[in-house]
Length: 368
Image (cartoon, rainbow, N blue to C red; front, side, top):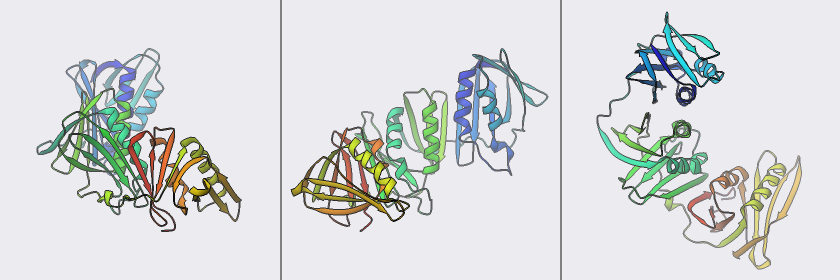
């Protein structure tokens, strides 16, 4: 093997693949990134047996070949190289990296046991989506998925697609986030559940690619493939269905509060200090007196009670929530002002942006 390429392209591909590298000591090649040079391109691959990535970059290939290199050592080495171009060769089963002022030799591992890419034999659905649409959808809801896979549908991100909308939804049963993005591309009706762990991998991949649009397809109802020029990423999906979440979103509203997002954020930040380990915050809404007060207390720290300027309508309500659940959604709302709608004690609050109809967030109360 002997090829030359730009340091930036190679490092970007390696960093993208490093996130996918496996950790199984019984199969050392899974902790490696596999290089294959041919036809003036270099493909960089990694897998953890659940998800697989392949990135192809242009290169001047003098000698074709294939080799497996430990991912952590490789990425740390490439990070330290400052030259614009880089030459990689294989000498005596070692991977040699040369730049204008750098020379590194990394011990290679046999690539013979590296798993082959899946064969896309039975494609269930194929859609095309803008990269930024996919990024926005996932980022807006990913924090609401459960970190546990005891109930796989709650430990996953649900992606729904049709002719008009691309929707991402996640819930851990205590809160739910939904992001709806209008799309013009014709898409098949699709419901996909991607486990949280692999959704985070997908986010990492998307943040490192330059493509504006990506094709995604479901294969054999068992894994999903994302493809673009020079990119292949696949991961398994959950065999199941997301809960019928729209049934738990209140249809009626007893109380509504419109408040500046900045004021609400500041109040929650202060409440977090005074709430101690429990992290409970109380909302006290009295429309006739035009009062919206946020309270928090802890036997070890003390207590706080802050009134916030707000437009309030409806009935009086006193209700408690977990601070983290409330605060997590705020970065997903583009509006300067937010709407909190309450359907009564023991029922969830729904949070939306005043000028952002694409996102809604539901949090269950603590005194339900």
